[in-house]
Image 1 (tube, rainbow, N blue to C red):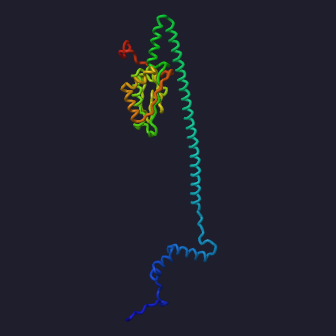
Image 2: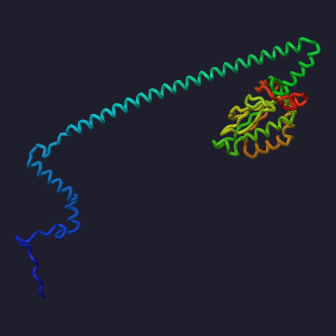
Image 3: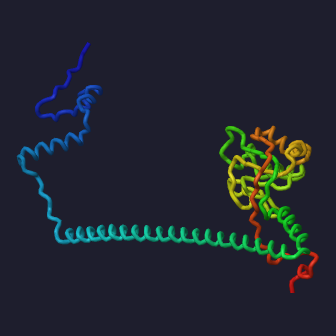
Length: 300
């Protein structure tokens, strides 16, 4: 069998690259670095050998234009920093001025409310003195006092029941969740107390009158436009022996008790020998007139 001769590389022939003559695994092992990195390293080595420890290239001077550009940039940076500092100081002064104005307005409002309360108390004393000045006015004075009791414009005290209502344990944080005590639930509870014979009612210190509203505002329940938070304490003046049983017999009371059992509301009703209920803050009626007077028939 004839074997052709293997050509040998002579001195005049170019050397084949390693990719051709070496195996793949051996080539990858010996050429771990990219060829471009190797060439760059070779250039740095040759430059270092030619110039020694001296640098091959020297930096060019930045020139007048470069110096002016750097100077302008520095001036702009300093100006921006100074302006930012001035704006921050100005904003802090404005914020403090607004805080002072709010505090002053709150103090003025508190002083005005105190003045109004003092004037109302003075008017009440003068009216009582005027009605007591004549014998025929004693009946009128009693009628005025009864009207004040019924309308909720005077403080009252007497026996009754104290009710504590709260959300169920581990209730979600959202107030709009149906498993929590809602405004309509408190409405049913209060309506049941009125129907059971309660004569005066407060919720967390807010006296209920004909102008009172129990409603949702945002994430809270409000009474008389005052935000309340649980637990809700309801004080009701009435017969402490009959109020609980009569409450359960009313339609609203039975509905409330069904809701309490369904959602697990915390509910406690205790009889009390003496309760103190504050007077309600009722706005002055300037345009409303009694239907029996001529002034109430219309406006000219």
